[in-house]
Image (cartoon, each protein chain N blue to C red):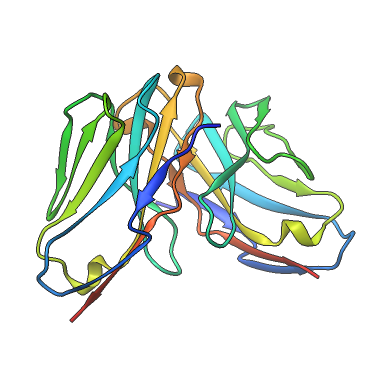
Length: 116
Length: 113
């Protein structure tokens, strides 16, 4: 089982460049999430989606955009990269948000992004 | 602003020691508490999802308890092994099924052989 597949694993961007982080899941999960992990901090939610065609902002959405055209895919777009976006990014998915084991998150392998 | 605190930040134990760490969260409007295990160079993996006050969950040598009235959860590891070395994350949800998970900073456990 592939689970949550996230690409690329590493990327270096110059200030002002754009890129898209890809995320796909094969578990037919309705809920998908993008988090960032900064040193010494907890995972922070950037954007999330409760189903195809529906997205919403998380705690730290500025500088990012998302789309959810299919159940499987949830790409994260950085339009004008800034040094503050240097971080490790994780995509995750869950089957439900209605209490119990099925609301646990499945994470992708992460993308280490540096903006110089 | 909802805050989730984990203590200690890091812990070094010898193989065979039993250990425990704490996750503190707001006691009002509780919905769910998650524990994840995050090994270096890998992605976080779910250990437990806890929803009821007094919940106790167990997976092998790892167990967790939940007190929603006072706002804390304990994670216990019995007879630590080097392969238990990882960062253990807790995450709290409030506000019903629409609330998002708030993650703590984690407790980094190192088990020496």
